[in-house]
Length: 131
Image 1 (tube, helix red, strand yellow):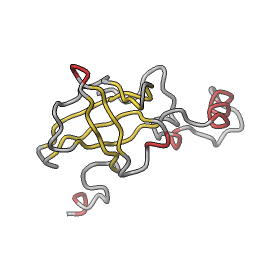
Image 2 (cartoon, rainbow, N blue to C red):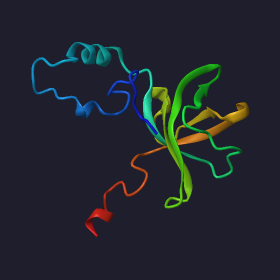
Image 3 (cartoon, rainbow, N blue to C red):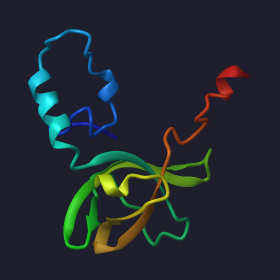
Image 4 (cartoon, rainbow, N blue to C red):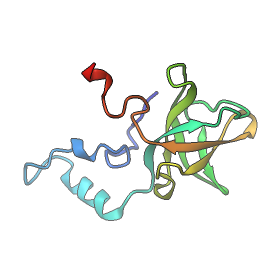
């Protein structure tokens, strides 16, 4: 799945570290400064689904809070290694803490609960690399 698009900025995607700030001025500096001052309206998070989820959401299904669209699923897969369904989604900043639950509107209008989990999903300490 695609995690960023032309409507996404690096801060929302958790990629602010990739914006070089060594130079006093760079292309996009004014925009980045304005975005930082404004704050985030959404944030990319990792999530997992309850194994009893009635349906599997798909990419671009909407994250809903009340009657408002607050984000969307950017990628989702059933991971045999982890034994669960995991994905990435944009959510409201106050929904981005690990353990937070959010709702995804799946096919047929079925609401599915997802739970925020830290990313990367597998081997967060890179222990396999040291084997």
